[in-house]
Image 1 (cartoon, rainbow, N blue to C red):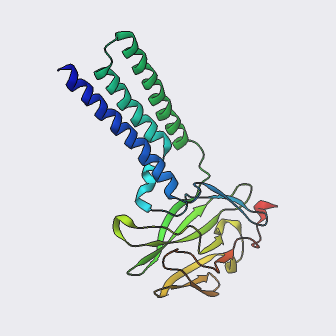
Image 2 (image 1 turned 135 degrees about the vertical axis):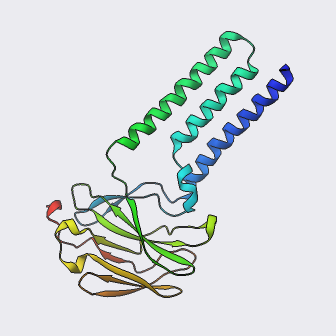
Image 3 (image 1 turned 120 degrees about the vertical axis):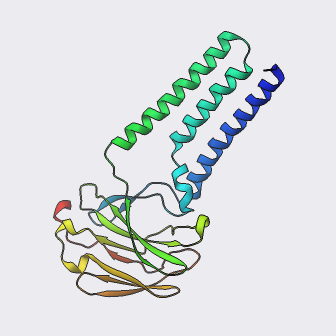
Length: 227
């Protein structure tokens, strides 16, 4: 392969590596604040990455972009760097960075999880869906967070704030503190019910996907685990 072609291929690989890093940064910036602490009266939990475009989230893991960029950088060095010692040194550095990123990502996936995890779609309308997350507690019982998502195909978004929070059933709290059911009653309104039948009508902003009056059944809920 001619040297000029090899160099152009190396430039292309470096461009792709830069794009990988840029996409990772964009995916992280797209959400609101990344992982965030949720504090209530005696409750401490972690919420998931909030807001932003749903289908960008798989690309938001920073170690994935770093590992991919390192691999592409090593390939570019193999093509463009003629001095053997410099080429091997560049590839070694890229390999160390890439392997370290992959190992850290693996350890993170195998370690204890404190962030909220999506569980189910609770209700849907032609334009929106209501989804639930289970948020494990930290020295307290966990909670069920209800978030609103738009239905816009690849451009689908999630609201930056929860429409409601209920304490989880394993807390031992009474049915008035536990989530029961949900349904859309209008284009900008949802009916939420606790297990005891108490119902709230929550109006939401169709663009912000949030409500000015969310339902909070976590803050004052009895929780022996937090005592």
